[in-house]
Amino acid sequence: MTTLLNLFSFAQVGINTDKPASYSGLHVSERKDPANANPDRYNGIIIQRYTETERDTQLTPNMGITQNSLLIYNTSEDCYNYWNYADMEWKSLCGALGKSAFTFDCSVVTVRGSYVEGRELTNSNFLTIPVVVTKPGEYTIMATTTNGYSFFTSGTFLNTGEYTIQVPGQGKPVAVQVDTLNINANGIDVNCTPPVQVNVMSAAATYTMSCGSATVNGVYKVGTALTASNTITLPVNVSVMGSYTITTNTVDGISFTGMGSFTSIGQQNVTLYGTGTPTSTTVKAMTITSDSQGTVETTCSVNVIVVVPTKTFLQIGSSSFSLGYVGETSASRAFLSAPVNFGAAENSKIKVEGYNFSTAYSASAAITGLNNNPDIVLIGYHLDITDDLATALANYAKKGGVIMMISENTSVERFFRKLYGMSNIDASGSTTANTGSAYYYTIQGIDDEITNGVFGDVRGLYWGADVGSTTIRISNLPVNDAIIYSTSNASGGNAATFFRTASYNVIFVGDGGWLSNLSTGADVPNTGPTAHAGSSTTAYVFAINPDFTVRPRTGYDDGVTIYNSTVFANMMAWAVKKAEENRLKK
Image (cartoon, rainbow, N blue to C red; front, side, top):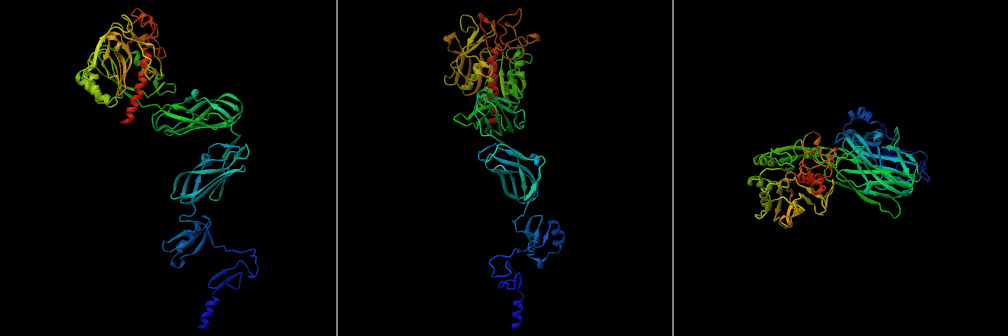
């Protein structure tokens, strides 16, 4: 029995000591002389080292229950591994997944934010690094400079695949210079060619922005990523030179940024570059924020307009007379089809892909067309509004449909009676407007999109009827819903000849020839002071310029100037906007 105890005692092994600690099988001592207070110069243990490939080819095939807990050092992972027989796999002491393996392309590393001498980095200062992970596990990424700031992040990749890592910055740039980042990934230095660099700018300048004079450049479409052409040109007035950083908020997926240094004082322009992809057609009110120093205004706003999709356009009218609606060869159709007015070009006043036109020359055809839910309906000369068509139009309007009614048929009262549920609404003919037998109407001073829209301000000016035809006036409209732009002096001047409804997307103009113009050859567009040589100076009232932009019609009745094309243009801009709003609500 004594011999057995001696065997257990002498089974203890000591390295660098002849007095191994009690109960230890192996004791590696830090001091050869236990009485010495200082550890020996050389101490520690080096466990057998294998690459991951060597481990899996040389060791794994021989691992079994007797090798359970076998310890090695994995040089590929830079961590200790031990054999776990229960799971029949190597476990890492660095975590459940161990160290990850990933690659990235230095050319796509992006430096975000502005870097200014003496200014502390914030959460807007970071690197974005797209990586390809080939082995899940833990990772560390750092990028250092010799200029007082650096970047660092760590985490765990749970799966293989492509990721974009944000590496936040910290510190404060000390000097104005261009810094080359020294990047290290999982403890390995990455040699980037060309190098990733950061431009540290001088202290921020003092300047004011003129957002009211800003220009939004480029075309913006839903689902189409912004390019280098999508910019904002922003006038500024610099009083103290230095760096600048001007940014916007992100609205519906897009934002703008500009940065640099002012090297002179006074008026100059800054370009803000857009990024992102628009997600909707709503007007984007971008708040612009500057880093200007001193007691100056540092925020303002500018609108970005997105092209709306193609609109379906149903024209309802008589086939015997094409001047009262947007016929295929009419001047008003030419105006609508010109990209300078309505189109997807950068200089288009109203951004819309275009129109798909259809026509209905009878009440039954009109009802069929309305059942297809067009975006915009234009009722022109001279179709009779039957009870069935009035009901269909009222139902369409109540669903948010857009109706532009240009008519001199008293049957229109059927539509308004059904729309409002009021039997006393009356439509009657009138051949007088301002004075005597004149055919022009004063546009009231109401300030809205129709009277003071993108194509011009017509408040206090005139629109003119096609002389020789009847102008319709509507009486007994609900006073809390009718926005009346012009009246007839007949019946005391209290009947509307031009109005819009507040509750529905409906506009009414009481003259079927209100868009009239000759429709062939050089007479489209009408560019002269009169409609056509040898014809009545008041028969053709819709005038546009050779470049299809709006123009006043001069030489009208009593020598006055009328603005039918400007009013129509504002009406169409309003109609496109309302049609898009209605589409988004569906």
